[in-house]
Image 1 (cartoon, rainbow, N blue to C red):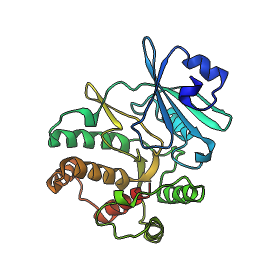
Image 2: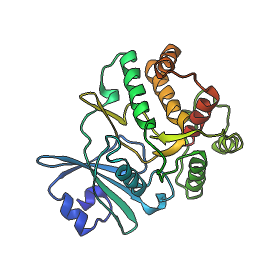
Image 3: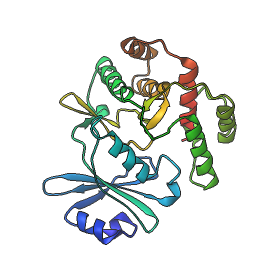
Image 4: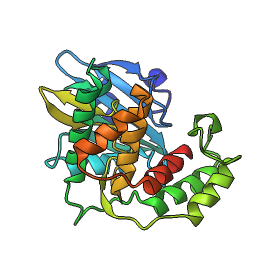
Length: 263
């Protein structure tokens, strides 16, 4: 098991997973490692991140705390075991039942309907006692920390075509100098069809490392990017806002699209 996971694990964790078949997830883009554990009657997921990521949204301990806080509020996995061992964070969680939204062969209108439903669930969470910051300052500080510790590899080719910045540093400085006033709500931080699960019309959420208090337009910006990527027609973006029942704030939407370009 240790050779598959590729780092030393504790006896406690080894005992918990020894009866499972372990498969490494090679799809996700996060620097955290994810492993699927298949047992005789259940599936678990193990996430691992080194301590160097402790000040970032990629830290497994942060996601563990977020998931524990969200349990009982919305449909998310349950944490089975967590520990920090020899400079590494390990979180073992249950499989969330359901199918990723992006796996369904929905029409654009049905896809957008579920996207709006997921957004409404997330933004309905009361943030009065939420201890998790995911606002602009947090994300920009995170980027700076990752850059200083050689953890960031910004791919400028992934930026929106209209992003008129030659380098990540140029974009970073513009984002620092043009921070909008924030209207905070609870945010998933990476709201997309791969992180929204449907199970008999019940909506669930995974990959919650970026979740916390952030401007309400951040998740809306992710929905706009998702719709543009999948359907490539601006009319569907208009349909999204019609269903959402609000007028788009394009200044904020474009700001958060650019902010995501740093990550």
